[in-house]
Amino acid sequence: MDIHEYQAKEVLSNFGVTVPPGALAYSPEQAAYRARELGGDKWIVKAQVHAGGRGKAGGVKLCNSEAEIYEATENLFGKKLVTHQTGPEGKGIYRVYVEGAVPIAREIYLGFVLDRSSQRVMIVASSEGGMEIEEISAERPESIVRSTVEPAVGLQDFQAREIAFKLGIEPAMTQQMVRTLKGCYQAFSELDATMVEINPLVVTSDNRVIALDAKMTFDDNALFRHPQIAELRDKSQEDPRESRAADRGLSYVGLEGNIGCIVNGAGLAMATMDTIKLAGGEPANFLDIGGGATPERVAKAFRLVMSDSNVQAVLVNIFAGINRCDWVAEGVVQALREVEVDVPVVVRLAGTNVEEGQKILAQSGLPLIRATSLMEAAERAVGAWKNDLDQNTRVRAVK
Ligand code: GDP
Ligand code: MN
Image (cartoon, rainbow, N blue to C red; front, top):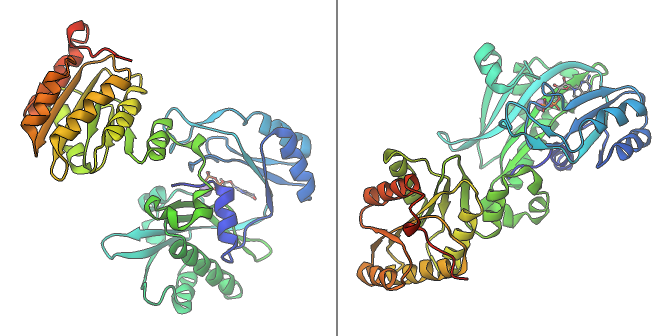
């Protein structure tokens, strides 16, 4: 789960990282008022969206008066900000963050990521802040400093000092740099983050080390341990299909195609998507309904898949190991009685009690298309989608 910049700054400041004074606003009036409360005569107004690259996309504005703040934010609110990280549809701006401007002397890049090969938290830093890390590694790879943290002892002072030295931080500011690095590491490990990025971390002309931007991503599977972080979720920044699925305990990723997939197990879901492509189609989603495919879960999955207007055929692919095909078949039949499904549905069952399962599907009287192998199922789904006008293969809503 991602959080907003202003939220990440609040989290990190609780761990000793220095951030500029700032305040959140939900309207232009409020933004101007917040600036007056903050004081000073130069402010930065920043669109709060879950994406980087806002500066280049017009989402970060320097303002010299309350009137300028009003005008700048009026042009941001309600708009979609399109940055190189959002995709062409952009992300809605519903909150802006107002900060007192900071006199920048140097910009540094600082990132904390999970390095899978060393199975450690890795610190990635560069003296070339402000640019994206991808640009830095393409243009100034020699400026990148990497350091892995030994989890048994955590980030040590000497190690943080060494990073500061390699970045060319002046001795007078080393202590501030050490505090920033240790604060980020502590936040990362205590809160089960998967990424902390400060870009830029700046050295000001009056010798302060300040996080001007902040980004944090958390491990969804650990959110239950951090209710105060889980609360920071902002659904306006997520794909609505994916957040609905998360609310229902399903793992769903929306895609561009038109064959909806309902599958148990992530590996089988991947194989199903590949096979659809092999058969000449495009999957509309990745959906893993998990191990215990109860009728309720199958119905939820159908509702979710059918809420995507791009879906023109559905492929149900269930492998029953611990499950039983007859239960799954009951679930499919029940789901189709409850949910309005007006596109062809192909069902492939394999595993325990497969004959009983097939019998239930056959006896349901529903115009389901049945398949034995995965390849056959994918070909039939693609075929049914291409012959979408054939009314006989459509499953009609019973309720
Ligand atoms: P991003 O483009 O989404 O990563 O947004 P950032 O928060 O990094 O802001 C983009 C750029 O705006 C930064 O790299 C800075 O150069 C500039 N910026 C942000 N805050 C300040 C500030 O307080 N003073 C000055 N002078 N520039 C700022
Ligand atoms: Mn940034």
